[in-house]
Image 1: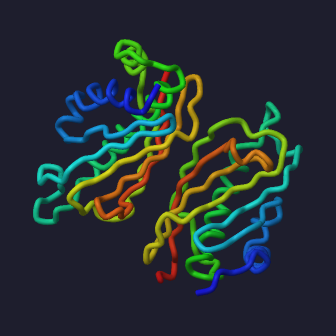
Image 2 (image 1 turned 90 degrees about the vertical axis):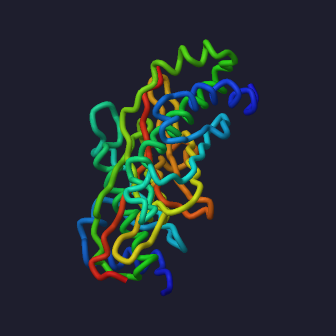
Length: 140
Length: 150
């Protein structure tokens, strides 16, 4: 099974789940055992205090794990979030977000991954960390 | 503060905790960013001696313990806590706020290693990431923990 390209991932997401790419979320890198999601900063979406909201960070984690599933099963959109747990580590302020998902285990029907989120340019100061799993509706 | 001195000071505290003694988990190393513990397989720690699979509660307990100890380790090095009294003064304020465990594979093995790294150590909370593996290096479970540290 070959790893899809960034362009193929974004094309699939735009076709099958337009809402997931309409708010500035996209795949920016993908390879064996990892996928990176990006989100374009929009000040209009700041929560009180000028902070990038928790739901925004949760969504980018979920997106990164979804892209990660494509490295395991190929470009099959029918993998769904089974669970996702996020820990907010510090305030996320004023910039594009990046989230790198890494594969922990690929089972027959579920994949497990972890995600680190940071504001672009500050990878050494993660703003959130998540662990979660995706259920493969068509088991391998 | 050296890793050897930190271990010498904290190991008696950790290994002496009654629950840790029941499980048989021991502290083996400490660093400014983490800690490592080990535990040997015993029938008393399994769901069923015939299966030999470690009980999930044992795995989560050890992940919790090693996560907490890595948070303590970060403070020991950061604040240069070089006496038993200074460490105990900090440790008695510790508590688990949140613990999440992913069980990845059955807990099979003869000897297990639990390791933890600190992702962030703040003024009041520390967030850690933990792993639980057997002697063959097979990753059996992962966890994340949040601890109140002050």
